[in-house]
Image (cartoon, rainbow, N blue to C red; front, side, top):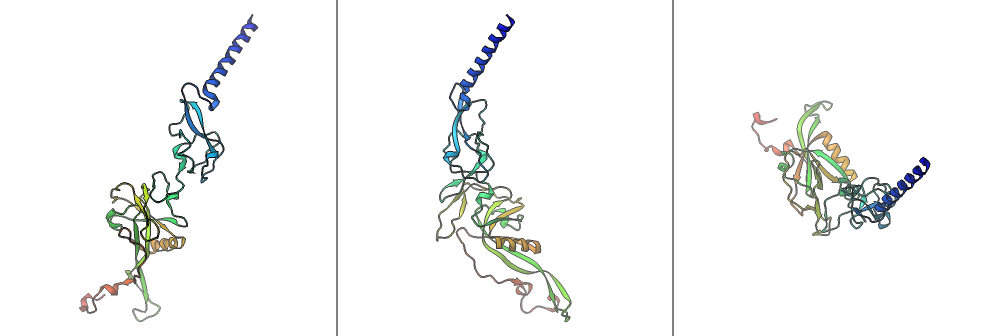
Amino acid sequence: MALLLALVFGAVAALLVAVAISSSGGGSGGGDGAVPVVVARQAINPGTTITAEMVEVRQVPASVALEGAFRDTSPVVGKVARFPVSAGEQVQARDVAAAGVAAGTVSTDMPLSFVIPKGMRAVSIPIDEATAAGGLIRPGDRVDIIGVFDVTLYGVTGNPTEGTDFDKYLTMTVLQDVEVLAVAQAVEPVVVGESQDGGQAPRVPVQEVKPNPKAATLTLAVTPEQAQRLVWAQSKGELRVALRRFGETGEVPVRPATDLDFFPQVLPPFARR
């Protein structure tokens, strides 16, 4: 009798398990309380552009559906994976980013690495309210970088081997017409505008960005060669940021200036350095 009861209970338990699996659809069917989620059909590596073949919609119990999981593949296809996604794993909004920004389209989910123009590098410089246009610079603006440097001149005293140090003697424009990618740690949502002269289209914030006088860094888009020049200048002197008028691009000749350029030709003896 005990053996018979064990067999009966075992059969009932197996039946209940089968019913439970059937009601959940095994991860792909319908059933009461089931919701659609997008899952990866294969492992997706970071930086991979997601195609329609890589993802599918499955029905899962609402209790296991992740809050940030996509419900349809349309918003996923064409995006780039930010993190590795395992086969069968639900694809969440945080896992993907826009592959690029076309003119007239808005991007709000792009990490900094996807905002950097092709062939460029992102380099940050320290700033404060006084050195960066009163804290009014915002992502998408274009700026010039001006450096103030100390100089050691030889032969001033008549001895060609003796150097004389002059603090903040030389002022020169280090870089011109560089794009601001981020202010502080925030990469603002931007829209790509139409180019007025066939050049690079400016990126414009889609919402009014509040001034950030407390921002400690400014991140710029520069070429590899400009990155070296910028890092060198930052290590040797003090940098200032000059904000350009919107839409004004290109470089203009700017001659470096020294202390002598700012003094009148004739000075009284007591005013001479």
